[in-house]
Amino acid sequence: MSDTSVDADEVRHVATLARVDLDDEEFEEFAGQFADILTYFDALDEVPEVDAETELVNVMRPDEVRESLAQEEALANAAETEDGFFKGPKVS
Image (cartoon, rainbow, N blue to C red; front, side):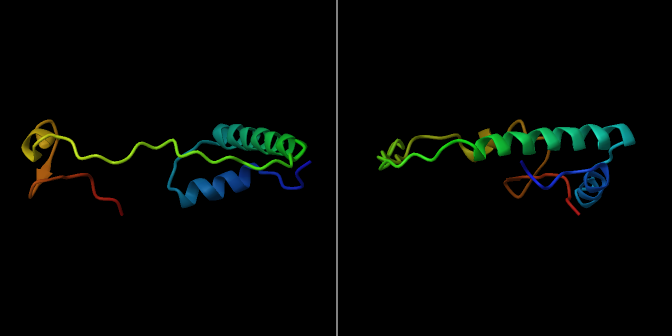
């Protein structure tokens, strides 16, 4: 069993740091969800370890160069562009 729990105050602190607006009901709701997640992690701790050699297989395909969109085509549906790049909102 996990000896750490998440309460509404901790959720409030993290929401403040992340600049996420939550109401009091949501702080309690997320605290409950975090408690559920920690319970699931506790269940994983109870899974016995298996002593076996892992066989690693590369499942990635090799990189290959293929035709792609021209820059103008890629930017055609963008809301805003600047100097040939996507322009997004400022993040402070």
